[in-house]
Image (cartoon, rainbow, N blue to C red; front, side, top):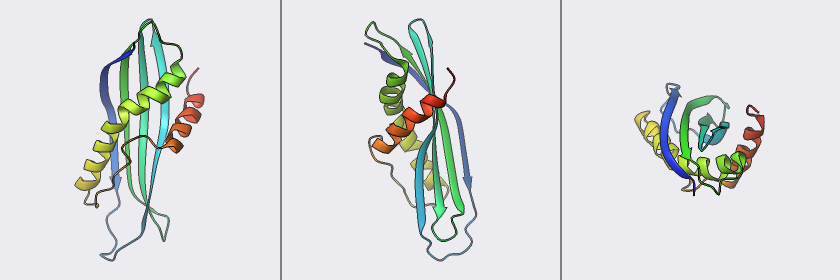
Length: 139
C-alpha cells in the first residue's frame, strides 16, 4: 500500500483589497485547483497541487481577496500502485484538502473577513477540475 511520506507547503500568497466602505457587500466565492502534476522516480511519487480561492464583489465583479497555496506531497509507493493521474486526483488532492481548508480559513480570518468554510471533503466539481488540470501538466 502506498503511503504519504511528507506534505510541504511550498508557496502561499494572499492579496486583499482594502475595503471601500463599511456597508455590507455581497461577495461570491470561488475555489479552484490551478496546478496538479505528478513525478515518479522508482518507488517515490511527488505530487504538486496548487489550490486557489477568490472572493469577488457581487456588484462590480472586482476581486476583493485572492489566496493561493502550493503543496508538495511525497509518497512511498507500494506494489499495488498503478496510475499517477488517478492517484494524484483521488488521493493527493484529498490528502492536501484539510491543510488547504485550514490555511484558507485562517488567512481569511487574519485578513479581517468573516469565516468562510470550505466543505470537509473535496467537492465533485473540483475533482473534475483536477482531472482536467492534470491533463494540461507536463508529460
